[in-house]
Length: 136
Image (cartoon, rainbow, N blue to C red; front, top):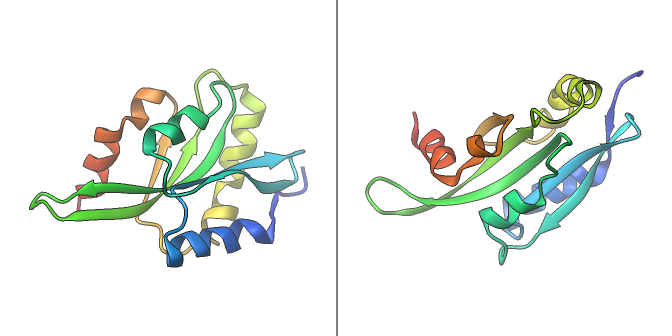
């Protein structure tokens, strides 16, 4: 592999999500070990649970999710979280490609609040993610 590249649409769609708050999540995949592309995007009517259902059980993915939650003093808040999904059931080579290419995408996505890597769906539980977001 000579190096994975991102498609311009990956950054444009993320910037629209960040500035216009028009998406709940964007899921990215690597096509043919060459390009990071948008696999799925969802509008604000979708939920965090909808996002979890979209993740493949045996393949890695990247995602950015606008995670809504309430602060400790009850104020509604949302943060953009970068997820690196690398399930334990995925084959080794795809996990290595995704792991080595993660920063290529992440560096282009400015304004992310947190990065979370998960190898099991239990690590993606909403309450766990909110706990991470509330950590200083």
